[in-house]
Image 1 (cartoon, helix red, strand yellow):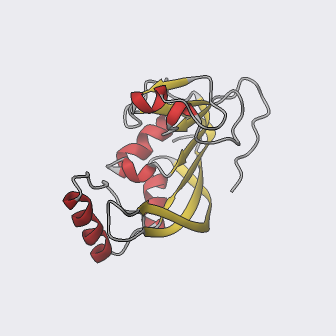
Image 2 (cartoon, rainbow, N blue to C red):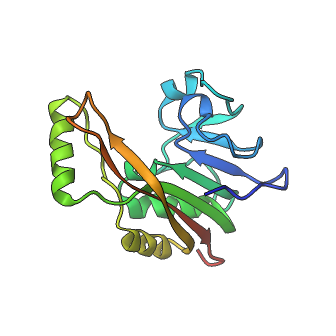
Image 3 (tube, rainbow, N blue to C red):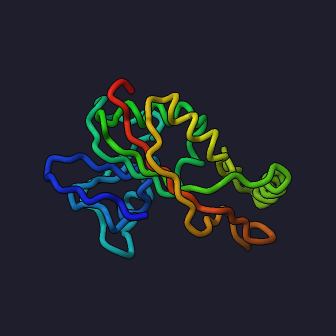
Length: 186
């Protein structure tokens, strides 16, 4: 799903979990900046165009003033942020009223499949993910409780959670994009 164009130079667009050199998304405004908790990733040159500005910070405690962002983009990041209700409240806090949140992530794995993936990651010496995807109705409820109005949810392809050689097979799930807008009272 395309991101709405940013037409004003004064709009604040932030990509949470931007990855190496802040260059994960290429369809964002040049005025956008990236946030990632991994300083090494931010210092690693990207393959594609890099975002000039980035900030090393935890998405669960963003060092941004309240009500300052027009658009927040999370691409396969929300499942790393637990508890989800805390993450949604923090994202809502930094959005301006009527500001938008675009989350692309995966639908929840079946519990038995998540348990097997968890075991395989542990056997490989890797940490498990806090969340192996989302129930979309529950995620919409969490967003609403945080002061967001869900505008749209669309399914689009697959999201890969883990691949060999670390696990025995590719674990993937349905990918979705949730678009929400901060309410005037959120």
